Amino acid sequence: MNTIRKVVSGFGGSRGGVAALVLGFVFASFSGLASAERLKELCDVEGYRPNALIGVGLVVGLNGTGDDGSSPVTRRALSSMMHRLGVTLDETQAKAIKAKNVAVVNVTAQLAAFARAGSATDVLVSSAGTARALTGGTLILTPLKGADGVTYALAQGPLSIGGFSVEGKSGSGVGKNHPTVGRIPGGARIERNAPGTMSGRSEVVLALRTPDFTNATRIVAAINTSMGSRTASVRDPGAVAVTVPKEWNGYVVEMVSVLESIEVIPDAPARIVIDERTGTIVVGAGVRLGPAAIAHGGLTVRVTEQQNASQPNPLSEQGSTVVTNQSDVTVDEEEGRLVFLAGTSSAGDVANALNALGVKPRDLVAIFEALRHAGALRAEIVII
Image 1 (cartoon, rainbow, N blue to C red):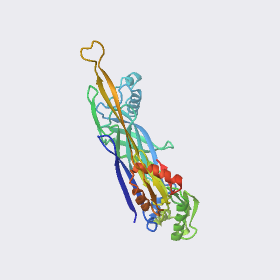
Image 2 (cartoon, rainbow, N blue to C red):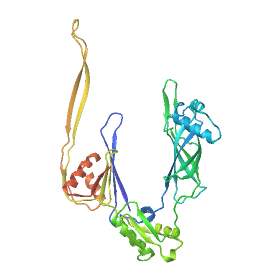
Image 3 (spheres, one colour):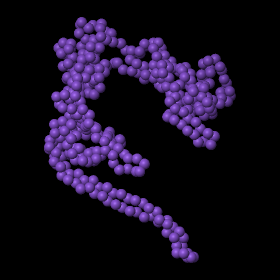
Image 4 (cartoon, one colour):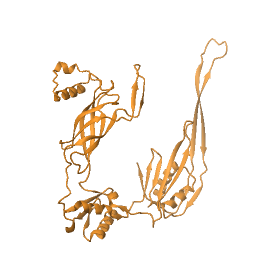
C-alpha cells in the first residue's frame, strides 16, 4: 500500500505571517510499491485528440463597461455585423458609432475527437479590447474555426461571469475575480464532424504520455500476454504499435476498449523534484540513500533599522533638527553536529533518516544537493 508522509515546518517571517514549507515524501516498500495501472492512464491512442477552435466575436448588452466607444476595431466589427444582418451604414455613419455597451472578444473552444455535428461544447470568451467587464453580456453568433481555416462550430449565448467590477466617477472601484473572461456552457453547436476515423485500421498506435524504455517494453509484454504473441511491438520509447488481429477486423473500437483495460505495473525513475518558489520537495519511491555522515549548521543574521531625531542645544541660534539612522546587527549561529546516516533501501527510510537531523525543510534542499555530489544519493534532482 502506498504511503504519503508529509513533514510541515514553519520558519521565521514577519509579524503578519509565517512562511510554511511542505516536504512531501511519496514512498512504499518495493514489494507493494507499484500498483498496476490501466493502459488508459498511461497511453493515448494516436490520432485520438481534441482540436482547438478559435473565433473573434462581439459581446453586446454591457452596462457601459465595453470597449472604448471610439475604438476603430469595435466600430468596424459592429458595422460588419450590422451589414451581414441587412443594416447598411456609410463611412460617416460608421465613424459616428459610440459602442460602450459592446466588446470585441476572442472565443475559444475544444472540438473533441470524433465529435459529430449537432453536439455541443463549452465556450470560453475573453475580452480582446479595453472592456472593463463582460458582466451581463451576450455573445453574438460567432463562427469557430480550426487550424485548417474550416468552420466547425457556431457559438452564441449569454455569458457566465464569476466576478464583477464596479467603478465610481472618481476612478475608485471594487472588483472580484476576473470579470473580463466568461464561459458559455454548451454555447457552441458543432456544424461539421471532427476529422478522423477508426474503421479500416490495420494498426493502432499507443502513445505513452511519459516516454520510457522500460514502460514501453512492459506494455508490449502485457498486450501480447492478453491478446496473443506478436500482437504488439515497441516502435520507440514513446510509441507501441498494436496490429489489429483478423478476428478484430471491423471492431477496432472494441479492441481499443480491451487494450485500455489491460493493466501494467509502470516503472518510475528515482527522482527528487524541488519547487523553490513554493518550497515543495517531493521524493520519489525509487530514491535510495547510501551511508553518509552529515553536519549542518544554520547562520541567521538580523539587521534592525531605527530612526532617531537629533536636535540642537536649547536656545541655540544655529543648527536644526535632523533624522539619523541607527542599525543594529545580530548574528546567531546554530551548533552543527555530525550525524551518521546508514544506507536506506526505500524512500520511507530516507524520510526517517533526514527527519532525524532535525533540520528545516528548506535546509534539506542544500543537503540533497550535497549528498548527490558526494555520491550517497542515488537519484536525479529536478528543480522546477
